[in-house]
Image (cartoon, rainbow, N blue to C red; front, top):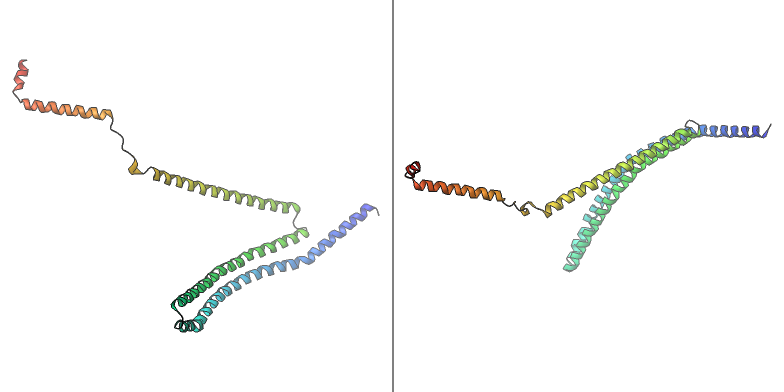
Length: 232
């Protein structure tokens, strides 16, 4: 047996070992993927209502505790403290209640959004593990993997380009609206002067007034001037 034959046998043995390992691990990978997706959906469906219920229950319990224990003692203590101290205590209670409400409003949406964001991440991890095991078993070639990578890169570039075009359009529209507003503020309608009368209109008015004066003189002369005109 030559050295080349021994290398070929070793490569075939390693390939068979990898194939056998992938065949053994593949069912576990499929099961793990299904379990991860199932657990992610189940956690999202179960924890979101529980978190909302727990927040509401905590708020109700805090309100009940305050009404049954804290509020009566505060009313009793108000009769023995000065007015300034009473106002300060009332202000502190209101601020504490407001802080608790703000903390609940701040925490609950973020926890729910974190649960919602964890679901696609788990599905993506499961799909990638399945693709990796499929590649190990020889079901997916290197060219197909490269094609998928290039497709994802093209989609990412197209998304970035579309986002850039949208942002540029919004900025251009905002700049145009700002310019129109500034132009209207700088040149309002009441500030625009009417155009001056032209010299032609003044001549027309002078000619019209001359014709009116001539007609008036003819009416004052009367009909007696007509025979004289005929004799002439």
